[in-house]
Picture 1 (cartoon, rainbow, N blue to C red):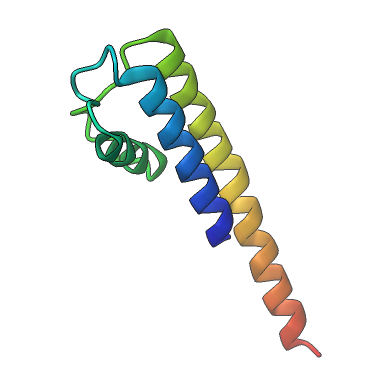
Picture 2: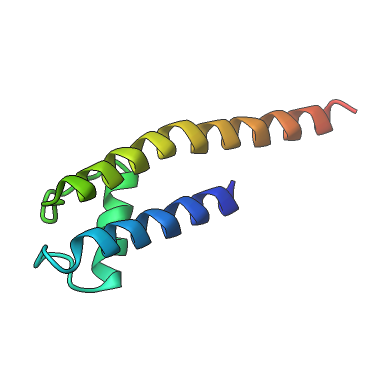
Length: 88
């Protein structure tokens, strides 16, 4: 689960940085892209940074969909494995 979260976070941050940093003054550094990705994937979404390019919006949409699909599935598999282990 942790590896899935780290992978999703790393890929999403890299993609949003590469698509937005040259045209979006709110994402000048990788750290700003990481901040944006964390607030987006945790559904906090402060709104202080938003993607301005269609590519950036596509990256964010894909990241959200991946986060909603992958993280709960991985967490569910982990809980199921832990519960199966306790029954033996």
